[in-house]
Image (cartoon, rainbow, N blue to C red; front, top):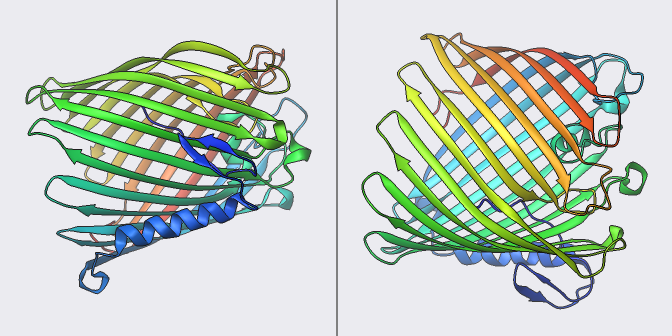
Length: 413
């Protein structure tokens, strides 16, 4: 099934983003906030906020870890000790016609004797929805401010220094029931991604927007079919780079029993790019994903493979192939374990620029103890590996950590 990438801001000048024609504006951020507020008020106006049923779920966590290569670099480096606090608040406000869901989390990260790596991360998501007899409208907005040490590990691998990365996103969608078995969904994703001191770290601010339409059909009690058309526009003014990506995917889901589920989606894309290296050129390719999930009384196993087109701070869209395996297991009523293993292959859509083409994988086993209803603790180990195609050396990191979490008794926790 098509999953549009998270989007970004609009530079000055007239461009097409996700099929929308936007005239020149002195500040693309002004357009972002105007759109956010306008759509937010439009969706929420019918709700009687005071009459909603409110729930809150506060929690606070503390994590300490040892990392022998926090920058995941092949150069000489020192091991570091880090401490992360994570106060968090979840809020739900619901009634029979719609509601709101919010999630706010702060993460101050501190490294002992290495304060240039410190960061103050912020993660905020707000989702609203309205229901009618045959349709449903949704609006999601998100704000993320984190460090390139975390956010760029998967996308580009540019983690030599800790710089702020800020992403603002808005995603309205509308779903309509056409018949007892058929639904139509239209959606638009728009984001603004920017970096602190971008020019000094080799990354570029970028905008990306995706508009999509999906028709879904329930074939039987166990079979589900869907078709998606999408159009994505990526623009990085500082890199003087623009990409237009359009495609189609067909998806199928089958529930074999209460224990097995299989999902697959395949399709094709056509990508046009215009930048300093190539002007008005295009390429075509395969996109898709597949997953198999097995659940049982004491845990679950899920494996998935995918090929997707993703935005990045490199100034280019990139093709990402992934292979992911997740295993969970309940050993006792109070002790749970899990193992996740992921392999990623990133490749630029432009053959002339292979500087960030690489393979990256991570393996992470965890043990979680539920000490009481409110208190839990976690022990984890993480192994990371990265190698660029243009480099002969490989980078590896070993991380060992322990965490404690307190969750206020609430339906949200």
